[in-house]
Length: 420
Image 1 (spheres, rainbow, N blue to C red):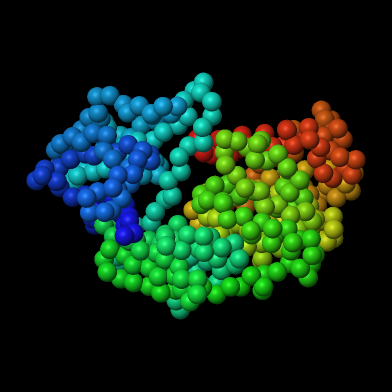
Image 2: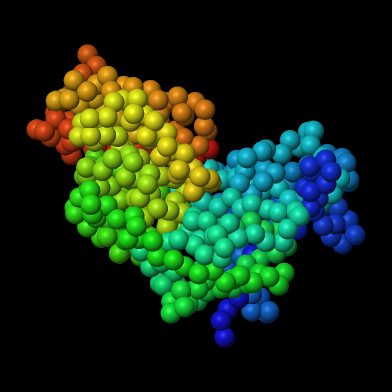
């Protein structure tokens, strides 16, 4: 008998004032202080698996409309630092115990940061769910591709992930739900190419998978690009919510990226020679979307200018389209863009590099989901020119020493984001 899974979450309703109203347990009004990190899975007598991140640290009775005190002692977690009680599971708004009140039972969530002086440990990641109040459950997509007329267009990597876990493909479903409704069944039938979904409120869906990989081939541009993409698509061990490294040769040639970024878990799908448009129109869907990364780091654009004779403005506009498309498909994913390096033998393109970088920085100022990383500044001499010692003799690609500096800047930016 297959185990069924139940994600235990508080039932919430939205009042006219926008306040989250919780159930009043035991005929009283309570504040529930939640551990808010994965601790253990417990199999209930019903056969459901209860998720450990819903465990309560402390429960206190409160007076409706009055302030209340926090627990007398803070929760303790090895290698993590407690940073306060927050109103959301994603820890965006700190609860003000001197002024905040609630008319109803309320859930507060512990936020955890890395302890000072400890070896860095990548924080646990909680996918930010979307809750509904006028609907029970809504299927938004499968592996970040929209469902239209009960069909979804997927590529080799996405379909491979479904095949690898056909009895439980809940990881692949993009959805929004009412807080008391859970996705109970999500299976994939390889022969019929149908994803079957059931939710606790009784609704069911059958979604047909359409393989569109051939339409997204880059073989006509380069057989190397296509073979590299095909090789990446064979890797079925990549899990959801890690960090994707994508782009052209400077990303592909970062052979030590896994080690350099550790303990942050990344996967590198860089392909040398590729342009911004190839990532926007084809490779994004094939090599990034199937893994639902919590962040994606791009280094791309150099080939637009050097090889395709695009201007800085044209390249900047292409980058904006890439950021737009990435955010459209991955609205809860952070995007990083590593600015184009100054290059020892390509100074005659520098005005175009500067223009493309400036347009990316302008985009960053208008969209909080993008952060630009100036990793290349560590490769410069005191006079502002690139240090050839950090590059190979082609004056384009970085040496091992260059990657130490460049890679650390990328890692530091990721750690800074993860710690917020």
